[in-house]
Image (cartoon, rainbow, N blue to C red):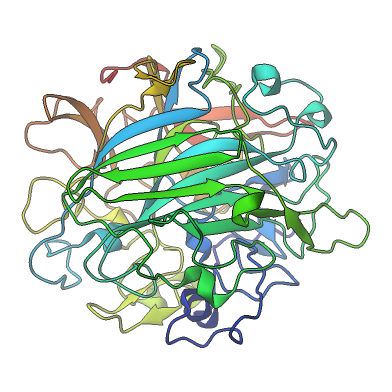
Length: 509
């Protein structure tokens, strides 16, 4: 077993090359391979591993996912939404208020000022997509927008190939390593697949390929979307990229069309709109599964949502609408990507693996995974009403598009889930859940979801306790719920998440 206990995500060259402008990048116009974790044997590691979905292990003997001998983990506290109404699994409309930062620059302390990029490098709204060349690599058929794809249906070999879509929002302030610039929020549509069979045979050259495009005012990518043809242009924001201000109110819509899955951002404050369609005609591609030579050749591909509904799990907690290869067990969800930025303290981290570190335009910091859980994400510096801490990301329960194209309330149930057991070192937390803790070892705090009033309605945020909140769902530990056991098929049953029970939605719309 080649399990490595700690996360090694990305080198300095990779981050600089990824962001393009003013960087040490591939030659202009030359292509790079977007292997999500930066460790593919054929990969030019030009792509931050912090924006990748976390992957479950290969088997009960190898419960932690590895990319060429490197353990990869991403801390993703999430809220999932459920409904059996047709359309709930392939459409969603959120009302979003983008958070603020303190007026003064951060100083690296917990008391503040603390900015958004320190606590989370991205938050995202997600949904499962069809990908006929992705895990479990046993069929090239996936019926889009269909509950014929609901799982579990054993054996795993009967499942259609899937990918996971994340509409990611990047905070201002730490360009070019995290942000589009130092003043604005921006967003990108990402779709990630898995080049691996249900028996654990993997294409180590590009095991977790990802397609990427900024949301733009024209609806066209600023460069090739990858995974096999991206260039530095693909990741260099232009004037066409939709930029949004802190406090802007944004309507976030995602839905299927005959031409492909589409996202649309309508900034109700600035009256600007951005779109992106994951269609072959718009340059989108996926990697073709090659079980013989394990090449990473791509071809044009149009992505569509996998399911019709956001079906809740069975009474025993076993999920039904999910990609089956991710640690997380949901279809429609909001998640925050935390646990990356921290003050330089490599001597305190195992192997000094918090690098790469930068002087930064605002504050020095390191961007690798926080191996000892002592960075800003794991301190009580989350939104709490203090002017020295960032403001909350406020978002509504998603509405659902009905057969007439109207957006209606349908998400009647919710659940909270965090993959903390999946990212803690095996030395202290095994795949059966023994020794797994919330907060994780070394952390003094772990954020959780709250409901709060917003524009005369009820909304959600990931935070500390806030003045005027409606509910904190029992607090830091109780809200996340107990250890969850998940059957991943092919004899692999593991504990990789804490999850609450399925709850009636207190904020239905």
